[in-house]
Amino acid sequence: MSEYSSDISHDKASICSEQEIKEVEKTQAKRKLYKMVFSDPCAYLGIITSVIGGSTSILNYLILGFILNVLREYSLGTNKNPMHKIGILLAILAGISVVTGICKGLSAMFWFSSSSHISTKIRNEVFSNIMKYDTTFFDKHGIGELLTILGEDATIIKNAFGPQKGSQFEEGGEFMIGTILIFIYNWKLGLITLALLPVMFLVILPFNSVMVKQNDNRFDNTAKSMTIAEEAITSIRTVRSFNREEEEIKRYNDKTETAGYFAACGSNYTTLMQVIISTSTWTTAIGEMYYGATLVDNSEGSRFKSGQLFSCFAYITYGAFNLILCIGNINTEQKAINAAARIFKLISYVPSVNFDGGSTYEPFVGEIKFENVSFKYPTRSVMVLKNVSFEVKPGQSIALVGHSGSGKSTCVQLIQRYYDTTEGRILIDGHDIKDLDPHWLHRKMALVSQEPVLFRGTIKKNVLYGVEKDKAEEEIWSALDVANAKKFVLKFEKQLEEIVGDRGSTLSGGQKQRIAIARAVIKDPTILICDEATSALDSESEKKVQNALDKVLEKRTGIVIAHRLSAIKNADVIYCFDAGEIKEQGNHQSLLEKKGIYYNLVNRQLQSKEETNENQE
Image 1 (spheres, rainbow, N blue to C red):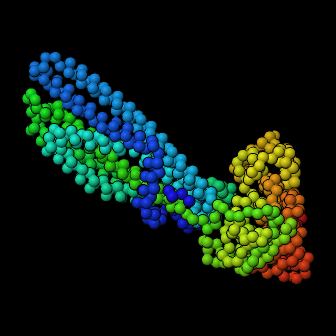
Image 2 (tube, rainbow, N blue to C red):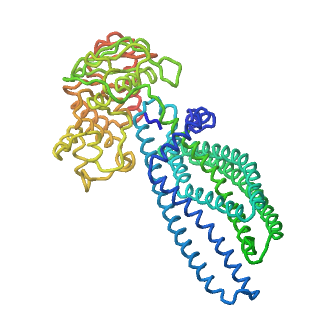
Image 3 (cartoon, rainbow, N blue to C red):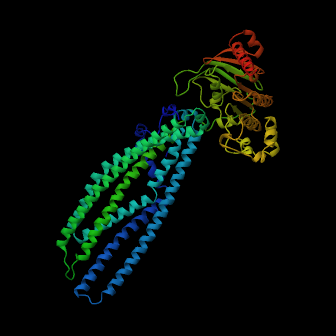
């Protein structure tokens, strides 16, 4: 690890909630964030150029003050040739402006480069960690929330430590140099200027605390709205089929409107703070101007003439308002620290299943053995598997059957090591699955599920997904042929280069399933898992897909989960699950003779099929 939908989704733990953020020490988040920022040399160059740019820009008012003195002398007749001095002063002013412009330009460039590097590093690290987390993590956290952290939090940090951070140093430099010059003119005027600082801090810091809290609430609701949007969009066909568009819109709007409310509250506090600070600044400036007027001495050799009074007024108004911006950026920085706290909390998650490391061995023959396995999901308290034991010999095909929720699919998830067992152990070729490298193990397996996931792209890209070595086009066609998919792919205009939509939306259910089977075939797995691979298909598509699966299962260790008789009757061993336990086992014929659970399941299916045929007639 680095150092550095539905109402159901709302029940998931939230990284974004205020309570969760409090659990992360913000001082540690701040320390880690600054360590990341200042690991880039551009940040140091940005500080130097920002301070120089801010310090030189305030000197413009110093030169303008001298020019006013020269013009006053000319108006009084004490200086008959003012243009010589004015020319020199304007040349100095031009030089200062050039230096200021160059420094501010470089500052923006350095800070932009630094912030872009930071946000890219954060996004890459967050995504890299998410991809390595176990299934438990995704059971607990909504996808929309993770996308919000990946996108918005990284942007918040980028904005806080981009050119805006450079402006903070510029504004601080301007106020500092302006205050020093005022002290040089008159120390009493300098004290009046410094009296403004406590007022600013007493107003800004409490307001800042409230605004950060409002922003946290806004972020929390934005993350929830993202989860709702992600679920609704990815499940748009289901939403539409149940006429739930308006309900989903309402749920989304409720969260965005709540987020908007908190954003407006934060904006109102910002406006009120600016009014108070602006009033305080102008009151101080007027008081300083009044007192300064009593100190003006336009005699020869005086250090405080009318021009210097103008300069002082410019210093305090310009410098103070820049200081307001500088201190106001504390709010932006605090948002970044909170964003960093969420990010560091996310990447500090310790998976219960470690996907890095583990042993490998050869030859891999595909023997699977469950020894007294019990399991409950980390987000639930009920045991879904209870003392389950069974064995799959190399090259053997078994079927797991039972009612929904009986534990069949859980066995498959444990074999793929999405989770670790609560009790007991699983052996692969005699090796404890917990000791094996998960990445290596997944290369030896392939899964064909009830809802095959295809990615937006070409058929070729989808077939080759997960294949590490290049495959010749002939091998792709061979895999499609085994999967009974070659015929329909040949009918496409672009054939292998045909683009399928998001999640394969341009293909029928049977076509998607056969592409998924081809993807499994070309991987040449030792263990093939079929989880309800034909349950969502019509009878014609089912027959084609089942024929394809029968071909693929030859000479492989096969685990089939299915309700349909056609998918399981040829299995070497059938295990009947009920309430997380194996109640019966045997082949198709022997289980029918027992007239138990399996017998009843088959009879119900046959009766249902007969009723369907009668209705069709």
